[in-house]
Length: 266
Image (cartoon, rainbow, N blue to C red; front, side, top):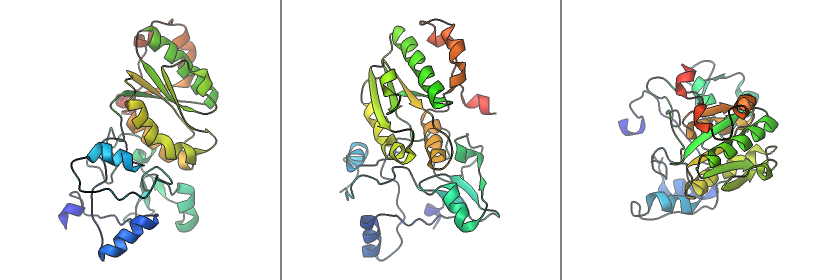
């Protein structure tokens, strides 16, 4: 039916990798078409408490299967084209797919770039998976990212803002922010993925004015992580190699620099 196609001529089929979800589908005796368990645009729920926060009073019950094992949404692959096209990266990586079906193409939006025109898959909108707090994603080598965020935190706090960082375990001690939340180790993208949305939600409730995110290498599961963080930041992206320029501007001149936004991708 049209309600399952979002106005497109395609429909996706997804089989959950969770015994509770599989049991629910089997008990229903039919395929299930249903919306996600969160309000559109918000960080996805990875715990029952997140669903309660978003949908309390709108739904009759929550079937709690525990914390999400991966924490990132499903991989979406367009099989109507040859070679297949990755529309949204997820827990199944490009490398794992290519081991089974051979080469695939990666849609620009899969890397987190803005999608032009009607979107072919969930998760391709300009701003998605986003907290209400303004976010900035910093990209570069791990050392440069940590140095850049450390400087930017000092600048923004000197300007009177409350600042938070969703940090790697390796860099967390470097940040003199109002709130620093550790999302995992930069050497373990699976851990970072499991904690990304929970971290965004926790920091969104901390009364912050600005939130910094550490970029990761966009390979393997890192491609899905960068896709989600770029959209969560609304394409407010800063390159870590600009730290030397920022340092020359002084501690109180954070507003004089500009984060890279969607216009820079055009």
